[in-house]
Structure formats: C-alpha cells, structure tokens
Image (cartoon, rainbow, N blue to C red; front, side, top):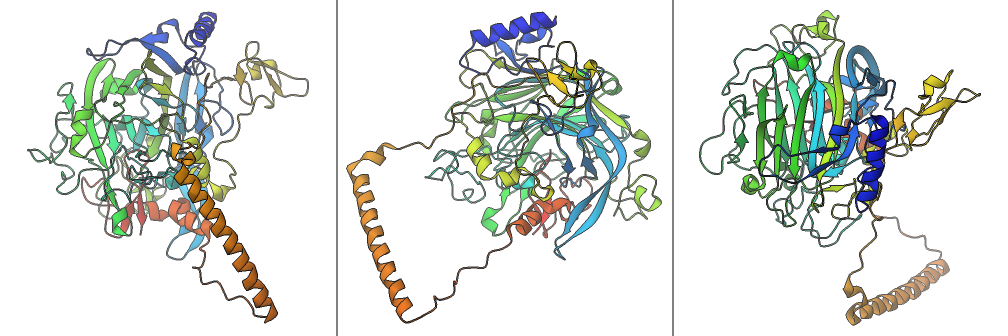
Length: 627
C-alpha cells in the first residue's frame, strides 16, 4: 500500500507541475484517498488529494521545529476566559491517531497587571494541546475532511474540542497578529470601516507586499466546535447538548438592531442573513452566538464581527468512534461574487452559506489562504455554569481545591484525562480550477512580507523567541537503537546515539514525512507602476534631488553658524517614546487576567461590558481587553 502511494505521489508531481500538488501528501494515505467527489450535487468537478496526514507513525512530536506540517504551541492562552495552558507534549501520535490529551497539571507563568503595570506569577491548572499549520500548509478553496473521535463524556461540560481554519494573516492565540485583521473578509472602500480594517481597500499605496485597493483580513471557518453537557432543553431551538457548531466568522458585521443572544433573529429583511440552508431538523441556527463588537478607542476603530453559525445534535457514538467532519469551500470570483461553504457530517449535508447570503453586509466568502487548527480548550465561557453557582465566587478554577472547584461543571474533574483523537486530515482541490490555490503566500493574496514586517506579533517575545517559527530539525535526536529513528524506512541511529534521516523524512527522530510546496510562489517583489518611467515622474525625481541638495547646503551653513557662536542645539520636542515591549505586553496581555471575560448573564457568551474591549477569538471571537 505504501509503495503504491509513493508511486501515485510521484505521478501527481509530474502530472501537475504548475501547482504544489504532491509535496504535502502523506505516503501512508490509502489509494482510495487520492481523489474524491463533492457531496454537492451541483458540483461535478474532479477533486484530487493535495494534502494529507494519516498519523500512522507512532511517537511523532510537534514541538516548534519538529514537524513540517504542524506546530504544537507552547504558551498560555488568554482568549475566551481560557483556563488551560498549551503544551506540545499533550499532542502525540499513538495507535494511528493524533492524540490531543487534556489533563490536570499546574503551569506557572508570568502575567501582567495592567492596573499596577507590574508582572506577577500566576498559574493555570489544566494542560492541553493545540496544533496549527500556520505559515506551513495553507489552501484557498477546496474540500477539507477530518476523521475524529470526540473527547470525554458527552454529558459532562467543560471541554471544547475544535477543528477549524483561520486566514494566514492572523496566528491563533497570538492576539497582536489579529488586531484589526480578524475576521475581516471585505474588499470595499468605505469611510466607516477604513480605520478598523488594517488592510483596507481604501489604501492607495500597498505596504509589506499588500496590493493597493485590496481589502484583506483573516476570516474564520469553524468545522467543529463541540459543546458537551446535560441534555435539558435549550431556549429557541430543538437542539440539545451535546451538539457541535459549524460557523463562518467574518467582518464587518451587521450594525444597528442585532439578534439578542439566546433568541432567534426578528423576521424581515435586514435583521439577519437570509437564505441560509439547513440539511434537516437535526441542524438549526445557533442562537447562542451571533458575533461580537470589537471595541477600540478612538471610536472609529470599533467594528462588528458576525458569526453565521448552526448547531447539530450529537449522539454518544461520536465520543466512542471515528466520524467524518467535512467542509466544502468554493472561493468567490475575482469581483467577490458567488462562492459558498457547505458543511457535512458522515457525508450528510448540514449547513450551507452562499456568497449571495452575505450581501447584507458586503462581506465575501473567504478568499484568503487559510491554515488548519486542531485543539481542545477549557474555558469558563464554554460549558461552565452561568451565572456562577450560589455561594461560589468563580474567581478560580482548580480540581481538588474546595474554594476553586465550586464553579466547575459537574463531573469535570473526573472527566480528565480526556483524549481528542484525529485519525486523519485530508484536503482536496478541483483540477484545473484557478480559484483553488495552495500556499500560505500566493500571488493573489501575499502574506510573507506582511508577516516578516510584523513578526513580533506572531511570536512570544517575552519568552525570548527570535522568529515566529523555528527551522525544521532534520535528525539529531537522541537514540539508543535504530527503531527509535523509524528504521528501516525512515532513519537509523548513529554510533554516537543520534538519529540520521533517510530520504524523504525529517524531524529530530526522522518520524515525519517531508511536507513542502513543489512549486512555491515567486518571492514577493515591489510592483513598479508604468508611471515610474513617465516624463512627469522623472521631472518629479529631478525636482526632489535639487530640493535635497539645497537642503543639505542650507543645513551645513546653519551648523557652521551654530558652531561659531557655540550654541547648543535645541532640545527635541517630539513625543516621548513609549517602551515598545511594555505596550506589546499590555496589548497581548502577557497571559494576564485582563483578557478574561466577565461572568456575564445567561446566554451572554460574550460577557462584555463598557470597560472591556473585544479583540480576538481563538474560535468564537471573544477575547476581552480592558481599555
């Protein structure tokens, strides 16, 4: 089977030279996985495999610099009232699956008190994992399918497993990268949004590789967000827990009269998106989250995001065996029209959004390069008792501590450890379709120069990171026998006790197959406009040079005069420079509690108040920052 897969990969590489079509395919992929057809009857295109990870090799690790496809982050998460700390060791391959395990463990970290402007030691008592393909593998359009078994007891709340996608211009949980970027999918110029959209269609000059007049952002596609808990009836829906949400999160959102959380939108045009498709009564509109207002000062920087979401009921077997979660994504045309998203569960249609449904706000079906994310979170905003139980302060959450366990869901502590098992990830794209592209920085939607120019926003500078991603280490891991290095096919153990990788394999222990773009995009160069060589432009250059020469002469004369009278130069009246690292620590929270949501009221999944600013979401778009 494996040799057959390698032959098919080689044939794919030679047959499709114009795209990066074979470098991301796992050789463990079975023959039947190399092509698929759309579940959408109107889509008759042929789809071919462009990315896969079958997780067949046990013992793979996903620390930064260990795997070409994934990075397991090692950091605190301060989004969505997060109670967990992400560690790479909580993500491993075992028994043919990627296992994301959530456990009870204490992690101390450096937090920042914004009122006292001081760092202090804090701790979280849940440890879990997130793997993301940020700036490694990205795709624009296609079919993404996960096979997964959900973690824990379906009747016990508190765990938040998720499979999702995010535009490459924002890195999940790195809040600085998402400010005024997430979740924009908007390419119109208007005064109302030009300040709040960092890369606006109103910009006549492109910076950091961005194209003038093109609005950019980082929309979010949620393939699965599972909500567990007791199965009592919920308001304004027939869906009961456990259920999972499928969503498109975009900006700008609907202004004015918005749906109230926990209630259905008012009937009539202009109150919510119309024409959304639902597959059956087992999937219905999600009335518990419609998006958030991202508040900033001054007021013109505030903007609204929308979550266009549906909920589907889950049976207990989804927590006992593997099931297939799929989204089919067709990007819009060049003018932003058409395109669609359609979600499926085990081949059955759940929910659909078309480009025409978004006319209400002028947003578009995403056309950004997007990467894949898998994680389990634990947050007091997801499946925890709201409001706080009587007699409980809900100021801390820790199993075994009487003062801190009263706010936990019933049975939560006994539900750990819990394993989220992903059997495979496969991505397909239509043959010879110009709208379907691979790469994190494409000709149509470049990202590399922008990321390089803002790289501090994509890494933990407080932890001494110098680059957002480390180079992939090839071999060198400590070993005692050949099998530690995947012998005989992947690598061997040298006499000095270090792994040496064979062809096509990489990672410290040689356990990961190479992943790469066969034909990476051309390096982003500055585009030179024809105006550059016009007579008017050349005359402007000559004039500027003459003016510069006169300035230099005048400045030299002033300096000589100052020296002759022994006059000290006047003090600089420019504004005092603020410590950039301190500002960044405040913006990113440094793991501090200021990014935590208030407890809120029933169905208020945002938990906002006038003193807080919503800036980013790991999944739902709910990160609060005190202004």
